[in-house]
Image 1: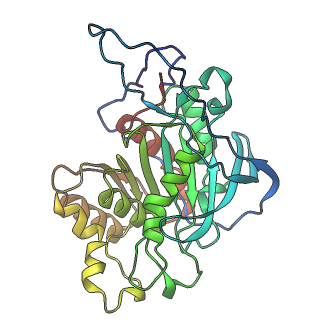
Image 2 (image 1 turned 30 degrees about the vertical axis):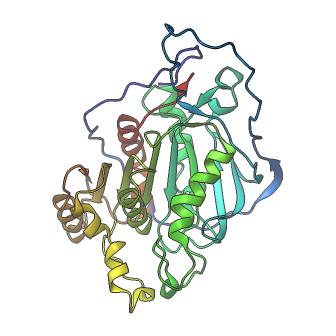
Length: 343
């Protein structure tokens, strides 16, 4: 539920129980071209007006739940127009990682509504299947998550999320898979994803302060990435939805670095009991091996990590089935993350 503009902050109500809806997702797609340059949202840097000293009897000011853009503003082009608004694209060179890669952004329609000019929005980062080098399948009509979110938000069933869709690899060959990690001797894509991308979002968009409004989701290889990043960085992310994932890092680039490989393994991380995050792990019911793999991983979870399981009836490891899981995932994320906040 989107807050109505008013002076006091208001948090969206979140359902506590998992919504058991039967919905499928799909496999990876191909990149789309970018066109029509579009300027980024500029940062709000207005200096605060001086104020008189507060009375000693006055209550302390309520901390703001809205983080206004800090800048510097990025430059975007329009990659694709959808019925729910444009998907923007930019190239981000991370100050901390040194990695340069494409990032796509979708802003919910409410974001540009003047009545929500002081509202911060939750952020959902989406990872694709396959190599996702130079593309992200959540940006095309195979996985129309933007249109679905717009509809569910209008019905009060989902938050209007800012959606961030980065690449996952810098080369298309699976022998060069970086597995969303800082593999020794390789580009620091893990730092780019966990630090540079969130910094980029906070620089350009109005967000919910703190980690409660931040989540990650992905299918197949993207499921691995979303689970790993949330478990490694519970200070950044509150929730994750890995769809039809695997849990053991297997890139050839890990050779000779077993200790580092295990430190980046969702299999090990979920059993460590160190990450206070909420996870919904899904599997397609048509694949016995996959359901077994996911169920075993769910069973390994230790508090404070909480992992719920959703099995898509008859689901296969296909993009067309991944698509059907989107409503379930968005409703679960809405129940497990903070919604839009207004001061």
